[in-house]
View 1 (cartoon, rainbow, N blue to C red):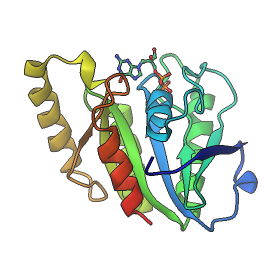
View 2 (spheres, rainbow, N blue to C red):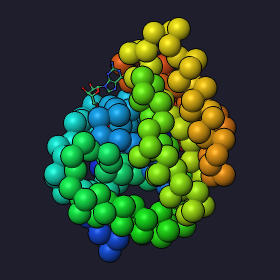
View 3 (tube, helix red, strand yellow):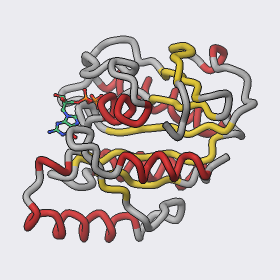
View 4 (tube, rainbow, N blue to C red):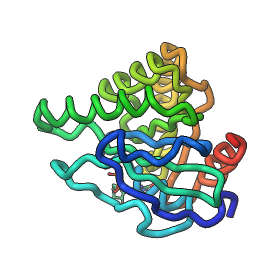
Length: 195
Ligand code: GDP
């Protein structure tokens, strides 16, 4: 396994709880239910490492995982809950903004997007936040297995078009399925190059 063994380090609810900024760090963001936990589990080869299906309304935590003394893998709280109270959304945005602005070792953010739905407005907003924080990011499409081959290209075109408007976006889109394992090795290899 490229990343080596991965361990849960801690769940963080405030900036003061972040571990020392002394490792290459990457983070994962995405709408709730996009498949973020499943992807992190597939990526690290450890089932149940990232809790699947976070419950809306739970304390928003930034979860830190450590890979083989080399990287921190950071699981940001899911966003875009339907009917989320404004206060929750603001809390999330405040935490995210502070996190993005404060981590010098953050090399890349991966923004997960459901391959069935493409980039939604709330994803676009996160991407704008990443632009403004000058954090390079890459789009990762999830649940490819749920999209018929003929329906893939129109979504990819939409994602390409949207990414083109974000200065911090990498043009390369990683297409994945945690179910079939498609794209997981590619993503692992990308992460491994970010030493
Ligand atoms: P999270 O809220 O973003 O962490 O999403 P989860 O990882 O909990 O996944 C949400 C739901 O989508 C769960 O029922 C998963 O089993 C399912 N899921 C996640 N990834 C995939 C995938 O690649 N393919 C399919 N078919 N289902 C997936």
